[in-house]
Amino acid sequence: MRLIHTETKEMRIFEYPDIPRYAILSHTWGDSEISLQDFESNRRDYKTSGWAKLNEGCRIAAESGFDYFWIDTCCIDKTNSVELSEAINSMFYWYQEAAACFAYLSDMPAGTVVSGLDSSFSRSKWFTRGWTLQELLAPSDVIFLAEDWTVIGHRSKLAPLIAEITGISTGFLLGHDLDEASVAMRMSWVSKRKTTKEEDIAYCLLGIFGIHMPLLYGEREFGAFRRLQEEIMKTSDDQSIFAWLQYDNLVPRQNAVKRHTYSIMAYSPALFHNGGNIVQSKAPEVEGYLRGIRTPTVFNNKGLQLSLPTIQKQNRISLAILNCRMTNREEYLAIVLEDVSTNGGRYVRVERDRLIPVHINVILETAKYSDISISKGKFEHQAQKEVMDYSRTSFTEKVSEAPFYNHATASIPTNEPLYEQEFIGNTEFANMIFPEPNAYPYVPDFQLFYGLDRAGREYDSRKDATNFIPDNFPSWPYELTEHDSRQDVTNFILEVQRSVPAAMEDPQIVNTNFVTPSGEPYDLNTLSQSEHQPPVESRYNLRSKRLSR
Image (cartoon, rainbow, N blue to C red; front, side, top):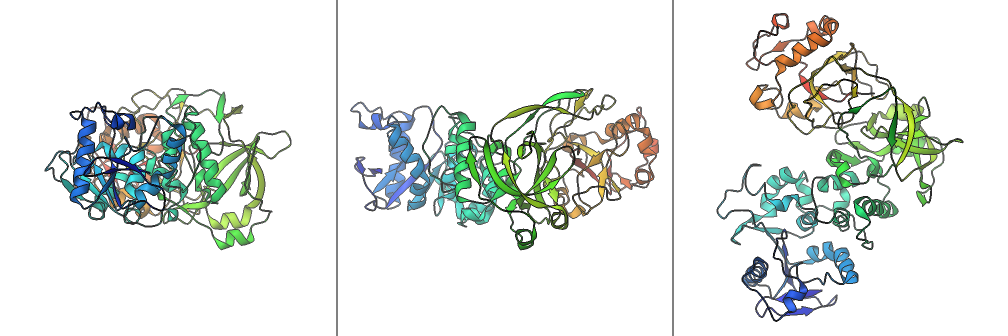
């Protein structure tokens, strides 16, 4: 390990266990960073920002009582692939063992107030980079510095705000064992972060999962991330690693289409963006009473062989039950598999935009363990789909984005007609929701539905509205104004009337108590294209829901 003496600026190499006490720097790279070769050169340009960063880092480390300082720009020989691989595999440990970690936020103006998600601190690029995730979590504490190298605050004190910024709970920010977080949850922490080299989005997670593996730049993101997942599965039986979702935009739909079906393995951590509320869960009743033989997980040239509780459905479709749940939910999560082999037993993942909640009682009554082989690469086959004509329905505004549990997530823009197009995954709208007797086979709750081209189009949800995040954040979407929600509810209801007039006569709709944001009754019968009345909300509420297929 190379360390720089904070006074003499000389670099020394230390071997474990004879590594002295040192401070370490976390930062985002600029255009003029110095390399090891620059540091060792006799032609040093001290006026560049890279040298200024090194000098200021040494200064603040020395003022804090440290003789040695580490910075990744010049303390690693990046021209040596062996050393680079060893360094990246050791990086989490180096940050973990540092006596102090200084996080330099070059885009944080000095004297700026650190509060709220709109602050310069919250918007700093430092919170968007892949490598800074482990630099946030590994040290015993992190001292944040503004652009003039003055102290902003400590991670321990700023933990509640950092939790809002990153989606990482304060417990893990304050030192809880990262292994207590499910694989899906840890993946979600990096799902919105970026790296300059695409493979690094996988390599920056090595320390988060305690994994060591060689670096193969050129294998692309999907290759690096696949290898990472394989290494994780060698040491963990946490099946939330399969609880990823891929959402597509609206795509053309035909009666018979070529549908992409995918491996059980994700090709990017971005597919775990909804994993922040997923927890590993092993119920004794499931482990002890389900039928079937359990076999170890095995990788071979055909894919991944493992045992999972499955529920056989129609048309070669099965639900594979994972040992994970959503936080504060009873149901296990399941993925949809399709048998594509002639003799049976060869599966691919389909419906990649869905995680199906399955109640424990349904699992115990109908599931059994199956030894299955699942493709770990992309596979295509022909599949018939029901044609759903949305040509009479259009929307012109984007629904406000907000976090949801597994029944729904943030929405996408829909500024186009929906003729011969389907809703896939993350395509959601603020829709009027009305109860219907239970018709959903996986969860013992009633169904929520709203008809588009016919009444009864189904939505996945739950009866207990207190489980919805918007109920805890009443400013979204219930204070429905055009400015706040970007959704003109009046026009939306008019679209309902125009598209599905029969649905508007449904007693459940007629009896729904619509009110204005001020609490005044709202008469649906007075709506017309010529009237622009105040936005409305319902006691059943306007919520964002995903179509079930």
